[in-house]
Image (cartoon, rainbow, N blue to C red; front, side):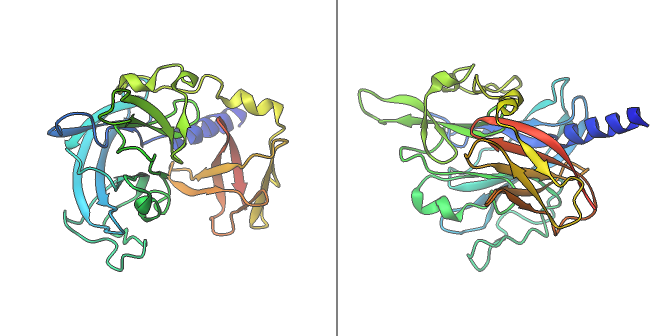
Length: 302
């Protein structure tokens, strides 16, 4: 019984990181290419049959601009590199889903109010919004669809966006001081803040790392939580919420995944309380991120 429990727990953790976008180039330098390359992450050696959909975000447009079916197998490290027709430049939200039954040109936000009609999108596995102006920061659909938004960096459209291989946090590289003698490539976090490239074990400004490990912050990792006394309680819970606390007062970002690996919650906690009243009874994996440290815990909802 203990062995079965361990295997189930291992499966849940593996699933929670399956089938996600890890890297692509929204607007690479030079002439626009014919194709856009994406790196995906999933269960090692598993086959996949997915869709990558780009939705316009220039002022709550909501129009499906690109839609491509991608198939293949994840490699032994759980990575796959696929290509789609070249994306229109940001602002847009890229969605990874199990299906797409609509058509290019469909308006999924007809009211232009930020509410997306997801009926044609199958099961949404991941979503990431990319902004090219502060005006579009609030119109991105990434967070609405259970993923993340990469806000405008104050400089230029992102050359490359990637997930930190340790924490899963999004970063982007950008050309700064464009056309000036001191033109260079710099790194920004998802909130548009400048980040020193030297904090990564691989320099992100040198270009994409498709098919291999993404750059990661050298000090990031699960062990960082050992010193801040992270607690999740009550667990199991039957009262509609759980408390998540640490000895560090910095904000806690929480992602919750169901047994199929679908993200069902993604939020920054207020008062250290996570509302699970709308979750069905069952086992979930909770991914907790604080600063650049990240860890996972099992949660049982009764």
